[in-house]
Amino acid sequence: MAILELRNIVKKYGSLELLKGLNLLLSESDIVTVKGRNGVGKSTLCKIVALIMSPDLGEVIFQEVEVNKLGDYQKSMLRLKHIGYVDQQYTLIPTLKVIDNVELPLRLLNMEKSVRRKKAEEILSMLGLKGKEELFPSQLSAGEQQRVAIARALVKSPKLLVMDEPFSSLDDEAMAMVIDVLKDYAKSHECAQLITTTDLGFSLGNKIYVLRNGKPISE
Image 1 (cartoon, rainbow, N blue to C red):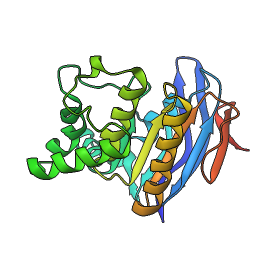
Image 2 (image 1 turned 180 degrees about the vertical axis):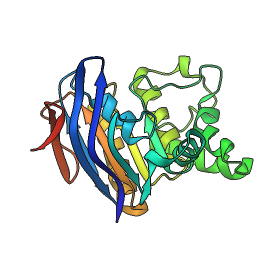
Image 3 (image 1 turned 180 degrees about the horizontal axis):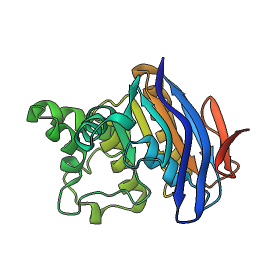
């Protein structure tokens, strides 16, 4: 079943047409990697897929819903309930402890405290962060902060996971662990995942593309 489809997406920045009639399909359990050098539009693509940014032209279909026809509140609720997003900058809240950062989406969904605490602790443990729950982001390494951001995206059991350069600060051991978690999650939750990277030698998932001239080219 299709989770999200992009149809003929165009995104411009001034006179620059960054995405040019882009088409992309993410179905249940897909892990899709989009590779490309800096500046080709990977982050823009992530924001459009995560319903953070609207295209200038084209259609975004999320679980058979035409997102173009929704208001801002409806889009924000779709994101909150069904989409996990990992930004390049992690965007952790510095004044909240690790456990509270991870719990935040569940708190916004009005989940009972004891339930959300248990879910947050479980996902942090899966990502090798057991014992870090009561620390603040500033007390963590960059790689640990990146894993906290991934935990926060996963904790609400999203149907779509969008990750912009999610391995950039991870060492080989941490990266292998995170990849195993993502693979298991895609299969067990029938979650579609989009991963971007500047590493042209990296390949993960069942669909691998290079973003070139505003369109994903199958590798």
